[in-house]
Length: 131
Image 1 (tube, rainbow, N blue to C red):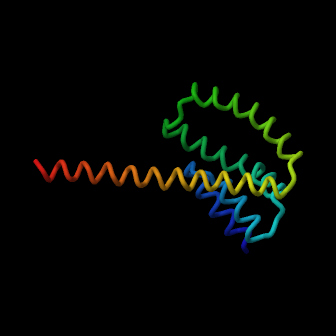
Image 2 (cartoon, helix red, strand yellow):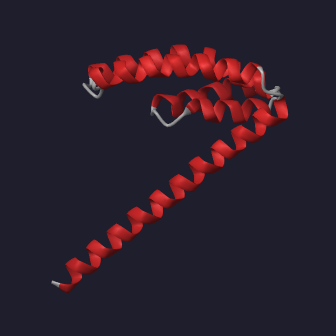
Image 3 (cartoon, one colour):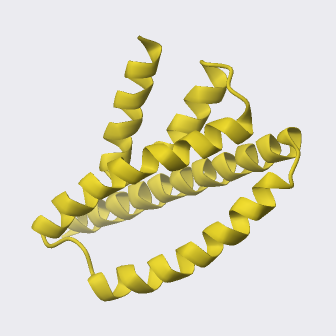
């Protein structure tokens, strides 16, 4: 049952383009107790069908800049080759630390963005009230 819930939650987040794989890796290691290498490799398999569906929906809605997507995809393939080889030769504890640092950086960025948007809205509201 927990696998169904994990897949559903990760799929929903993945479909929105917010990184369902990041959540999947966290849930597989934290809830299922799966080793980091296996969780990350499982995420890669999970990514194929979920991204295909998201691509189809977004192409139908004309939300994809194909020229940009092709360039990023080519560089992504090269990066994936490098990253996969790097991951295979990295011990589990180091990999977990890097993943934790990655999540912390994302969290800090998101908090910063929220604060920045809040301040912008507050400034706009003050300007409107002073008119």
